[in-house]
Image 1: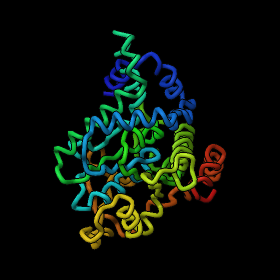
Image 2 (image 1 turned 120 degrees about the vertical axis):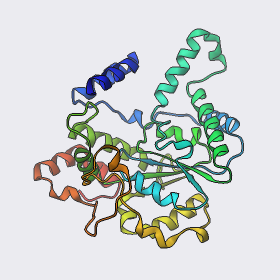
Image 3 (image 1 turned 90 degrees about the vertical axis):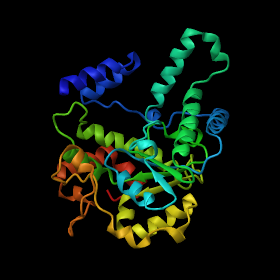
Image 4 (image 1 turned 30 degrees about the horizontal axis):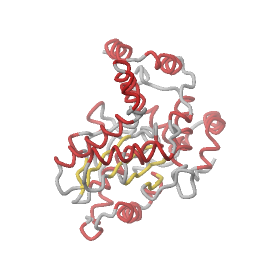
Length: 323
């Protein structure tokens, strides 16, 4: 099975990805801030937003939940938002929507398209096809959920600067979580024998870059926008009712029809402490009375705490976490 997966990965790989994948497999750093915040000029952004709106037409305001990286609580946030009766979660049975994460491949497809007739480059720019795809896709999803607000999620914020333009007018909920708990959860969730497994250093590095990207969208950040709400998983766990209040104000959903009495009764999905395996782990499970997903990293050794602090301590402070 692992050999088949490896063959699939390498079979689908583009030449420009070889170095990236090689560094990852060797345990080296393989990401940079440009992977999360590619530069987009105001002119480029306006063009992309116009293309996306043109392909999309008139739809209800979509909602996208994006996480700093996997194991950051996007399932929990998605489940809270999905409780609203005017929301259509996972429209089109898209349980994950990694379109931004795949933006580089979309740009590569555009280059392939131009290779067959280069003069098309006079009318097509790097992310144009991605913007049109996003718009048309949202139009189709809206047709499948008439009258509802589409809700999609992805536990990644790669290419985050594209989000306001590829998904113009959509309400973004950007989820942070203490990076030490993210690393702890990741290492306890995914098999150590998986080809996709990342090292402690790679996980800390990815969390740092994702956190730096998300905080640029917070109040006072260089990418601040009224369409983005930055939240912390720990704050939602501590006061889910307050999060729902803020989320409803952000998205414009009617608070009077929200099932407030069910907020604190949500089951757990995907816990790293679950004994279930594979798909069963992601099914709703009753919350144990002692369930507490916060500060599990406190049981780490002094060496691991110091190691994470050296790799991503500044980002902890940036996101308001103690070092």
